[in-house]
Image (tube, rainbow, N blue to C red; front, side):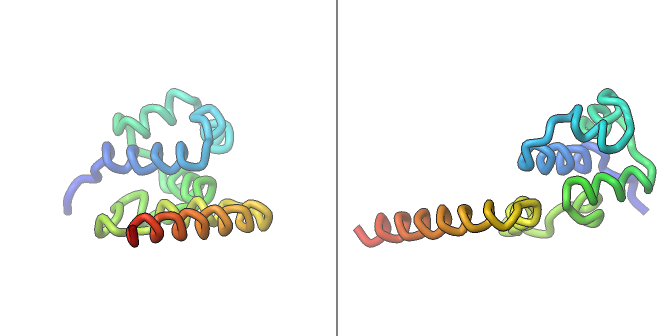
Length: 112
C-alpha cells in the first residue's frame, strides 16, 4: 500500500477552505486545534486523525474520498458543487442568475 500524499491532501483542504472564504484561524477554531496544526496539515508536514479528517470533511463540505485521493479527472465539478452546497437559498438564487448571464454572454461571443 502506498503512503498517503500529505502534500496533495493538504493542498485540497487549503483550496476548498479558500474557495469557501474561510480563514485558517476559522478552520482551526471549528476543529478545536491550533492554527499551526492546520497550517502543517495544509503544507503536508503532518497527517491527521480520522476524527479530524471527518470534521474537515463536514466543515468544508467535501468528501473524505476527495480529501484523500483527489479528483479522478481534470473536468470534475467537485469544487464548484461543494461551494454551491454551502450556499443558502438566497445565495443560490443570485448565483443562478449570475451563471445564466455569464453563459449567455459567453455564447454570444462564440457566435460573433
